[in-house]
Image 1: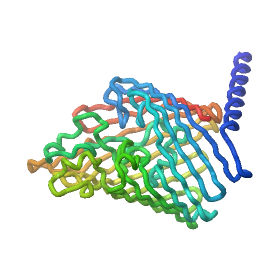
Image 2 (image 1 turned 45 degrees about the vertical axis):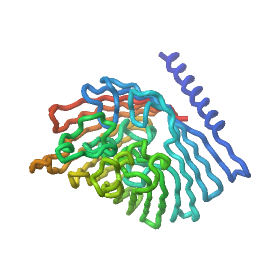
Image 3 (image 1 turned 90 degrees about the vertical axis):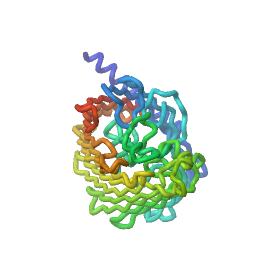
Image 4 (image 1 turned 180 degrees about the horizontal axis):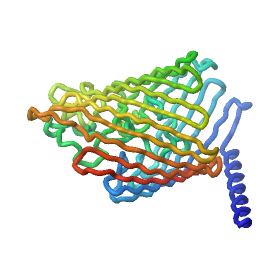
Length: 399
């Protein structure tokens, strides 16, 4: 036993030393240290088991899925005021799937900070939305869970490629492939545009003008894909009464249909007539070993032949650090749908109300390796009653 423990310690120390050397090799500086750049990344290996339909935005044909992912980050600082960052990924799609491997540039942006006190920042490029508080911890190393909260990944019956031809058509709900439909927010929403942000005393602010709505699919995020004809405005105002608390409100408005849908819209209407309007609030709290988060989103989709389709989604999340290496997390998610007319004078909900519990346990073996296990019971109000029991595991190597 003592020999095994000694060998394990030696191997761990050797691996840590190799990663430290790699970190030094991937960091460069020039011009008397006025230019500093660092390349880093993560390697994620995820495994999923779902006895029924894959939850959220997971797209798979069977009941199990193995999802590898390589993510590379480039951070560069030019003097005290200019910062550039980029994120590239090689995986089977932005969301876990059993598709073919692809390589993408998900993020790239340049940020200018004229004053050292952070009162004003200007950012241009393709980057995560400024709304909410989950975005700041959505990457695998920072997220206590393996997946996103329900508002960021649970699809609704609304589409952005093919508008409904009638209210009866919309009332049929989700009938095609899940990638045809939209959530309230599609993950971190890496759409393209410009933003301003800053902090003044206990208040902070952020506002962005992007080329696509919060619900837009990853294929819509590039400005080269859909242009900037129907921009979306999103803003967040925050208040920090002390170091423990952070409170914020978010508002967003913008057209959500892709250009392909224009020809199928009602006569005399264009993409700008149908918008997604979203109001949100968020709160976070940190105290000793505890971290707490909550977000609430009320979103309205203006749907052709239907009118307003409203939905409310929220989550409550807690993380506790048992030791510097071991942590546990628990999250309650729920989404509720309003009613719409079905074209025959009757009203019915346009989506399936659901709740989901995410319970995760994580362990950081070193500063570079992390393992997470997650169990997520979920229940909806659709035609298949009962609770789905979904399980996931994720191993992350950070360099």
